[in-house]
Image (cartoon, rainbow, N blue to C red; front, side, top):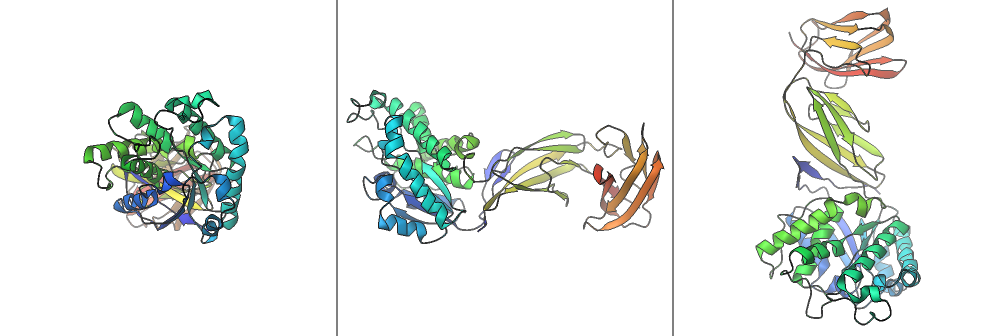
Length: 423
């Protein structure tokens, strides 16, 4: 089952587009149920233009072990092909010693993950990293001193949830990491209820912001927020929730199967080298913004005129795809459209009126084939060379427009250039 989501970023800013409804199942306990996290997440996503359907199984105090034999939880896992299933362990167990977590939690995390993937291989398991109690876990402090403080408990939760994502080839949603950032930098924003454990409305909203960034790869900045949160605090929670995920996306998601689309570009004159930094992806589709495309991993492209071009990269695997966008400014067009890797092929003039020259400097065009395609991808001129140092292509009979010239030798492309034909 293939699902498609889209990510937009233009000049470094993430914007919103809705591709289709995303289905999410929350499995947890009161940390998920208090303040209705699933509904809060749904409302936030909707305000950003993304449609979500959800369900949950979150009885108070439930552990992964209890969920693994709970008829309701198992039924909900199997009721449909989910896009994402979010797993939240009992709040204390993942903070215990590594040996105890390995015994009391990891086997049941694996069992639940196996049920999820057995129902649909394209469903992504997302482990919900929770937060340390406000002043540490006093009830278990004597048994395991590292969790006597908030920082010690938070560190163990972080380690355990990341390990679960590694062990189960899954994603981690770093709510606890965002929680720590808010605590450290904005202590006046209360994230806890009076019991110093469960989330306040602020805490639940922060969790929703982290989940939105985790599942949609977009910032929650500008989303709606619940009654009880003022606008300045909402912006802080949105900013931290989004940045915690998006600034370290590979840390939280490279162990799973959610594809990431990202790239950088280097512009020299009218030539752009695109460097693909995506992960969890097997196929790439580039659109250069001038009607030309590529499926190469790291293509280069030559523009035929100055201006702004919106370049997109769609990175996909067998289950999902995301699309990244960036705006490039081309401000310099040279007379020679490009050189090959050895700087031996000159193609000029460009734009061309009548005769297009192809010159091999310090080399000969042995067994070279020249093919010229129009903007529809149709082959309009094909010419083979045997042993020339230069040759010409007649363009007088061609309609005015943008063309793609490909030179190949022994079935290997040695030059790929955009040509403007004028009359």
